[in-house]
Image (cartoon, rainbow over all chains, first blue to last red; front, side):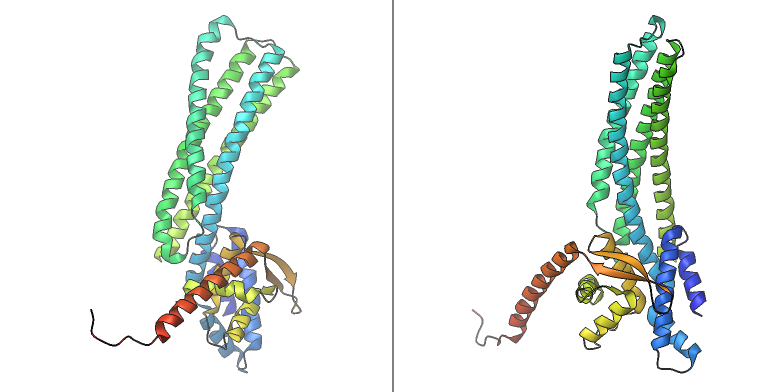
Length: 231
Length: 110
């Protein structure tokens, strides 16, 4: 009986494997200790009583899922700000480095580079504005309790929307940065210095990809929690 | 009503020292004179929420039964939160006590 209870609890939290395992271990220790402390000599009866005292595993899983969702929201909010700050530093460093090694763009590619540069700048500042708004909004709410989930889900929906727009703008910025790096590389002869812009673009892609994964995880977890809440 | 005060109850139970979920429930029962008999599973979301808020820290230990056990400890932040909540609760009790025990005024309304 205890195993069935633990299986139900773990299955309800399967969207977060580490949380599911932690909760299973905690509940297993709790239930076994409670059975051992039960005065009844009938083991099965003791298990029944202990499980009844523990409560509905799906209801417990719902509460734990909401807490995990709040943690994931805050993590994503912080990641957005860190990625934006990292990207800003990378871009500044990149510009300084181009100036230091005096890489010039060929005249025929200059208008294209200027247009891409303008789009990249606008995309970056759009991502920054919306990203900071998403961070402020995501950090504002404390962990919700189950009775406030309907209000929290609205907050979460708005946060996901803001984060998605910021990430989309960031992706435009990363693509623009990549295109600018490609134009500069096309204008110069190959050298060991090529490694720096390639590495920089790879880092930008990695950072933006991490954000996409975090937001996707958050939206999937939100959908899962909403399902648990309705059940 | 009890659920609304669960966080404060858990913090108060852990003020006696580090404990795992089962011991927290036992401590709540003991200190409330068996008056607070919560569904045992409800304690864990509260413990996780308080840990996330930075009021508790936790670590795995191996119990005598050889099973792994998660032990929770009140952090400094948690101690401060408990002190604040105690003060608010004290004020509430005094105000409520004054309201409920004061003699009703007799006479015609003005």
